[in-house]
Length: 183
Image (cartoon, rainbow, N blue to C red; front, side, top):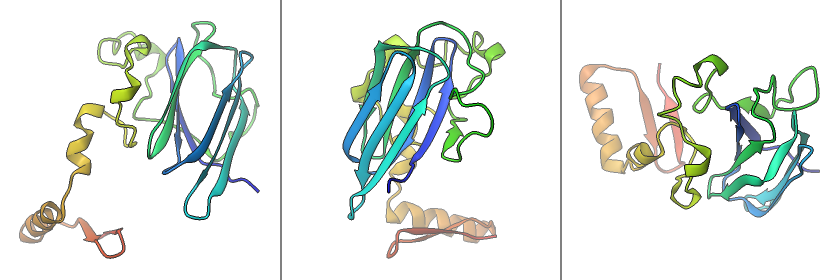
């Protein structure tokens, strides 16, 4: 039986950002059909656990103008809408949204704010998928390295600063790669 990876989405009037969070995905299969059928499957982990998403998007899409990129941590899909209009939801199915579908608040822009942020947003035609750091976390891709480059020395320095200032914070455990939040 297949599992569902987390699918995060955001939209503009002309496109939908779809990010599938699945680290170390192998045997990735993506299929997008003009009527809005979206299919994804892959395996992940040492046991090659199968993952799958099979949904009907809210409206028709332009398959030829849509783009996909498979990264080491996630799969990003820019789906070009056939018509430039705001969708009321991601999927056709009415009612409760499946639990694996989440809003990508890092990319989300409200319909009435779209024009205000047009200069700062990622434009569909200007996306260079080879330069995207698809590590998740959202925000500005160029600055993501500063957050992911913490070495053991940097973490120790942060913890020492927090201890001196009496702040509660994060405790790093390198032996198990776990993070413990202190209160």
